[in-house]
Image 1: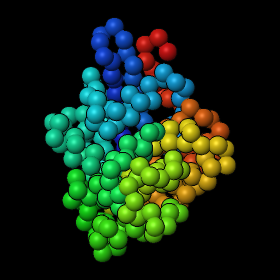
Image 2: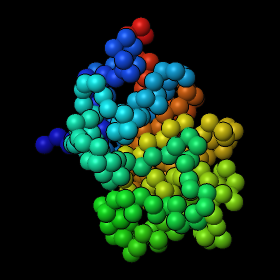
Image 3: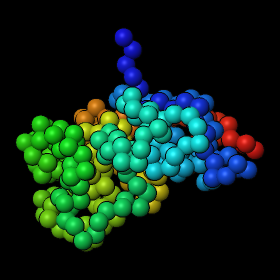
Length: 233
C-alpha cells in the first residue's frame, strides 16, 4: 500500500482576477520525511503558493492536500485547524510576539492544536519541557527561556522561530526565505541545524528561497518557474 504524500498539489490555479493567472501548477508532491528546496526569483509566486498551501489563500480550482485533507475545499475554520495541526511555519520576519517570553512563543502552536500539544507531552512530558528541549537543541541557553523575545538578537529570534515551528512534530515545516538576512557561514549552519532538528521529529520540509546555492542542503530541489505554467510565463 502506497503512503500518502504529506503535501500533494494537483491542478492548482490561482489569480486575483480573470485577466491575470499567478499560480498554475499541474502536480507537486512532498513525501513523508523529505526535504525539498523550492527556488524562484522575486515575483515568481513563492509567497502566493505558500499562502495556498497554508490555506490563507483559496485556489480558483485544483487541490492542495495536506496529509490527505484537501485544504482548498475546507471551510475557513477547518483550514485553520489543518494548518495548526499539520504545518509548522518559519516566516521570513519570524512573526514572534515580542512581549511574550521565549517559552511562551514556542508553545503557542500547542494552544491552537491539541494534536501537537499531545505529541509534545508524549515526547517530553509537557509542552514546556518539549519547548525547553528544542531551545537547548537549537543552541540557546537556559538564561534565554524566560526573556521576552524582543530582547534577543536576530539570530537568537530565528532559532526561537524554528523551535516554535517544530514543537509537537508537525508533518510539514514550511520555511519562507528564513536565511535572507544571514551571511554565508551562518546561513549554512542554520540550515544544518534545522535539518537535524526536523529529522529528529520525522517532519518534512519545504524551504523556499531565491538563492540557488542552498540546494545542496536538501534531498531534492525544484524550480517554481518550471512548475508554474502561469499565463505569460
